[in-house]
Image (cartoon, helix red, strand yellow):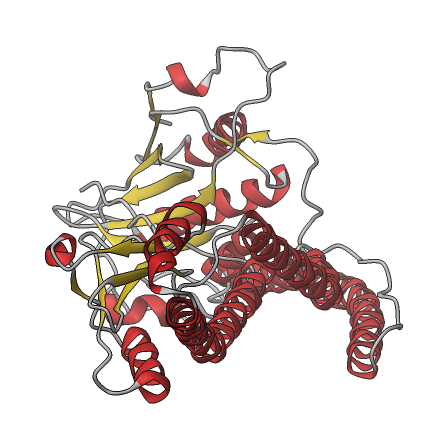
Length: 466
């Protein structure tokens, strides 16, 4: 059964982007709120200014008309109509006038004009409204006064000012976020280097008090971890020497002792199991290797592991099959990957016996997207789904169905630990028609340009029956 991982399509944003967008939105919202407040405070003074303009124009025309002799009134009104921005209409010409726009601003203008000129004064406009307000004079003529519209100015200087304010807000947000995010970015890179087994450079203990304390604590933690790793390596070297030397003497004494072959064989098996357990303990405790600078062709490593397994399987009926459906390049240490594959193949040999008593192991390489999968498949009794998580922990072993042989319970934990170092993981999946799929899930990278186009593994679908 071919099982593929779910593709994660979650759109992720970094800390810098998230903080920048938040500050930028806050600044733009503040700018919009400021413009709204400015316009709200500006509307009433503008309405009062328009009302005062209308009142003065009406009062000026009325006073001028009353002050001049009767024979000069008509020429005077004609002069006002033709040589000023005021306009006069006769009652017959004013039939097309309509009411002013019914909004709060123009209602305010009407109320202010009526307060100064009387409640019988009516303000009208043309359709469509072009900014000219009409007022009926005492002689029944209509006087048109051109006024500025009550709206936020769209002059170029306003547009440029708003654009400059928005640009400065964005730049200020980027600078502020960069200043705050820089120490965290350095800390994140240093933590990532530590997770990959590297020794990061000491973080600068400068800046705000909280950042200084955090960097100092991190530097102290790195120093203590490195010291603990050094002590552990010394301890492992001592264990390897102090335990394996007595085991070698015991083997020699058993060989020289006068006991039956059955007893000698049983003791030798026990000593071999002890030696193997010590080897697995040392292997688990050993720190992972440094990641290589260039991608590794895993197909070559897989074929090397299969080739090394041939002498072990010469006198058995076990079948080891290998096929690759894709190129397989990954940034992982060759020795680490070889240890992972060897452990999984050995695990399949021990516990992957079918009901017919045969062991058939399939090593299959395939990919999907940017993930690379190396499957080690067998036809054994499999693993219950509720036991998978437990078996990936150190010193955990399955039920009797898969643990009839000897082991320390570290094989899968070693694989999980080494894969995590390269950004991968181990998955134990049920196999269709019975069995287990031990899947190594690793990030896939492109083949280096200078590498040869052909790979032995791509053409290797032949059965390796040893």
